[in-house]
Amino acid sequence: MEARGRKIVLAASTSESTEYMRSTWRQMLLATLPMRYAHLLKTTWSTSVETEPDGQAKYVPQGLRVVESLLAEKFSPEDIAVCYPDQLHLFVGTDTRVVGLHAHNPLGITFATDVYAQFYGPDVEPINAAEFRRLITHPVLRAHKPHLKLIVGGPGAWQIEKKELQDEWSVDCLVHGEAEEIVVPLFEAAMRGEPLPRSIEGASPAMKSIPHLRRRSTYGAVEITRGCGRGCQFCSVALRAGKSIPLEQIVANVRAQVAGGADSILLVTEDLFLYEAGQQFQPNRPALKRLFESVAAVPGVNYIGLTHGTMSPAVVDPSLIEDLTPLAVGRSVHRHAASTHPEKRYQNLFVGVETGSVRLFKQFMKGKAYPFRPEQWPDVVLKGMDTLNRHNWFPFCTWILGLPGETDDDTRQSLELLFALKDAKWCAVPTLFVPLEDTRLEARESAKIARLTDLQWEFFFTCWRMNLDFFRTSRRVQWLFNAGIPIYYYTLGRKLVGPKMKYPLLRLAHFPERLLRNRLYLDFSNRRSSLYRVPEHVPIPEHRQRPEIPELAVLTQQGTAALP
Image 1: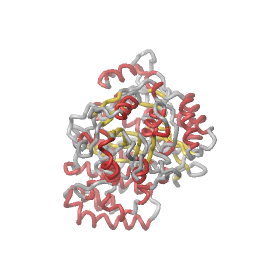
Image 2: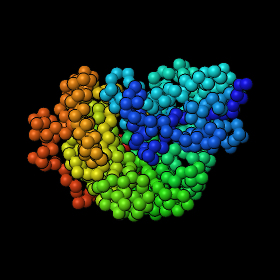
Image 3: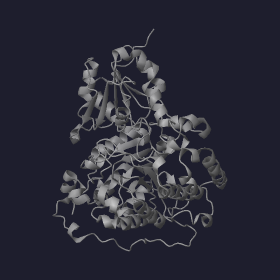
């Protein structure tokens, strides 16, 4: 007898739901590692998820839980199921009228991931893409497609449209943007069998439209802010003014996570320091302390994780980091021998450094430094890193190679700033420019690994050499890795990219710097001094110290070009 199923089924791929080792960066790796070699790389953790006794998902991405909560206010909870691909057959049946799929990075083509899969050869499909394809082409969806609507939404839904896969995958509607105020009408139309728009854009919702979560999100994720407003031209979120979720709602969502079995809470934000921020991005120290204390006070919360932040607040008010450290670091799940914490804990925070070039910084992202001037960016980065490290915050910092118009001189400036950070406690994550949808640079051409310059390749692999040195846990594994680099270059790398990557790769393999000195721009053999030093103090320009100047409104409404 054929299963009747639930009327509404929501699903997410396992690779975008896994909580393996409570590590967000390990989940990001799944959009870079090739599915073809997954068995060799032993990535069984990539699909490690848990189910409830009835087969529903124990945890899924936070955005899907928001959709579930909205629908549960309109429809009977018994008509809704949330699951992974392997359990779809339990819930999709003859009564099913709409299936909603979550797409965070369904094709693996965002900034931090697009470049890495290409090192394994052309047309290599990363694990993230393979797992999403397994979800969206599931046989049970095809079998019941005549009587159900397929809706796909999430921050990566644009990738399906860009690659022209909507018809091939029989997607009725792609949902872009913030969907709180369009989800219920859209699903109601789908339930009635009405035609749906091929794509629909959600606007920033009123705060009352953002629902309380009912069940557990991956990593115990709880949203604390939305938007940013700093105006970076390569980012859509930066073009939307920031807003903060009320503390009472945050705490209620934390309790929902704990009730679902989570003992770790991930505070989701585009910028931690914008939580309840004042005019001109001024951090709100009492509100931030109250936030951490309130989350930590919920019974069952053992760990607190963070997503994103900016560097300038740590420079504007270093004592803010000191005040947040007892809970931010003391409740962190991460440990490293370099930490001075009694239990060797450190807190992670994703920070966009993006470039060491003042020219590119001023052109594309000058609001990121506010209230400092763009010309102060190298000092802001160095002073901010020094402050964070001193309190055992070890940030993961992204850099963008191939920004429109980047010259060799721009790359040299990034290399100089990277060199100045060589002894920092951090992770440098080089990425390639991708013209994301709904950004000011969406019409520009993306960077390609085949077109990277010698200097850009040096920057790329110098980052990873520094990361390996800082995070290395096994000398034997390091030795095997070093030995494998020349083998990779001569069997595959040279064919894919050419000789430009040879000497940068040899630095990654720990070849002696004296042998690379005449081949690379930087020299790590202690014969070279840095052009930069950590400043004692980074002064805020006087005209930006006056709170009566409404530059925040100028920035969020007109973009960073309007800033003096």
